[in-house]
Length: 109
Picture 1 (tube, one colour):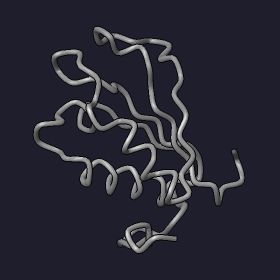
Picture 2 (picture 1 turned 90 degrees about the vertical axis):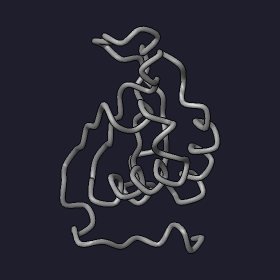
Picture 3 (picture 1 turned 90 degrees about the horizontal axis):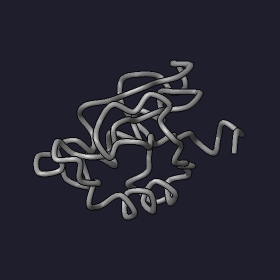
Picture 4 (picture 1 turned 180 degrees about the horizontal axis):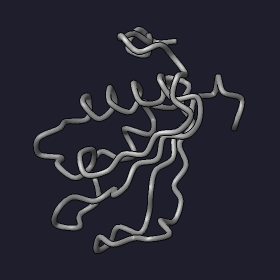
């Protein structure tokens, strides 16, 4: 596992059964760079033993996150499985997808 993927932090791993997040990641790409997104998703996956769901995946102007593919590649290198799903109650223009992430360690691939 690359050094940047080494887990850490105060919360114990796999404490939370599921996690959903919205209105921070992907919405403000001018304020949160690729590193910030990667660190945040890795930490959410680390403390969750189920799925982490993130919505919306577009910014306030309905533009897709510009580093989305790079983020998915970095997460895969850290053993995080990512899947795009259709958002059942999409309310943001062009925001009809959500990102679901989970650790390969969970065995739910």
